[in-house]
View (cartoon, rainbow, N blue to C red):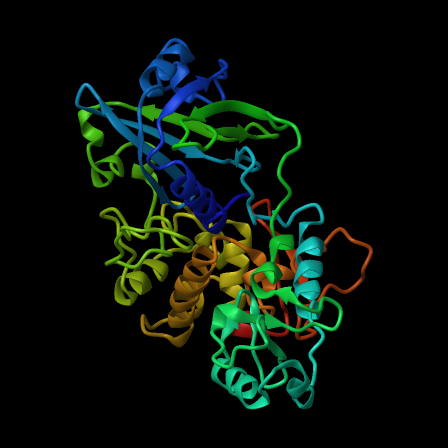
Length: 431
C-alpha cells in the first residue's frame, strides 16, 4: 500500500508538473467505488458529468497532502473553491505520461530491483588511485588541489574521496571549476559527471497510454511550446477513492481538514509543527504544513500512548492517531525504536518519561520525515533500515536478514504481517 512517503512523492510530482496548468479535459467513467459521492452514502452528484463540469477549465493552484490523502486545489468557480481529493488505497497510483518517477513499490520483487540498483550504483565507478591523478592533467598540482577541495562532497550522486580521479574537460586550463570536471572511470572514461546521474534509478515510462488499470484521466494545458500533460489514476485492486469539493467550507486547507474524510485523521508526524510551504519547490516534502493539525509534543504523545491498550504495531496503524503510517513504516519505526510489534506499552511502562516511549516518539518522527524528504525513494534509504529487507517472507531463502546479519521473523497481528528482528526487538517483560 502507498504510505506517507509514496503519497508525498505523488504529491511532489503533481506540484512539480501540474501547478499552474489548466485542466482541459477529464475522462471520468462512472465508477461508484472510485467516486463514492455518486452513492447514497455520500450523495453529491448523479453522474461524473457534474464532476467534469466542475474541474474542466480550472487551473491547478496547489498540491497538498496529509497522511495517505492528497489533493489538488483548483482555481475557484464562481468564487467557490474547487478541490480534487484522492486516496490511493492498496494499489493506486498517479501516472504522468512521458514523465519518469523514481518510485519502485517493494512488493512482488521490487525490493530485489532496489537492492540491485543500489549495488550497481556503488560498483558503477572503479576508483583509480591518487598516484595516477598526475597523468590526467596539464598541471598535476591544479588537479590535486581540485580533488582535495571537493573531498567529501557529492557531485551528481558521486562522492569525491582522495582516490577519486578528476579530469578537466579542457586540459589547457589551469583554473578548473566544478562544472568543468570529468570523473575518470576505467570502464567509462571521459563520461561527463552530469551524465553519471542515476537515470537507471528511475522507473521506465509507460509504453502504452492510457496505462493498464486506468480508472480516470485528466489532461492539463501545455506551457509555451510544451506538450499537454496527461495524468492517469491507475488502481488494479479498485480500493482508491476520489472526492470533489466545491463549497465555502473548504476555502482553506485548515477548513478542509474539518471535512470528511480528513476530519477522522490524526496528525501527520512527517510534518513539523511550524512547517510551511516553500515558494519554490524542486524535491522533498511538497507540503510540509500541518494545516492546523500539528503532531503532538512528547508530553502529549506519552499520555496518549500510555492510555491505549493496543499492541504497538496496531497502535501505529491507527490513522486516527498517526495519519500516513502503514505496514512498512510501522515496522521500520518499531525496529528503529527496538520495540517488539506485540508489545503493549500500557502494561509494560509506568512512567510517562520512560526511555522506550521517547525512543518510539523519536523513531516515528525520524522515519516519517526521512522517508518523505527523499520522496519514498528506497534507494536513498539507509542500508541498515529494515524496510529494504522485510519483503522476503514467501521466498525460498530460509533466513532473510538485515544488512548487519540479524535474522528476521514474521508474525500476523490483526490480519497484517509484521516483520521484526527478535534479537533486537524483545518484549519488555522478557528482556
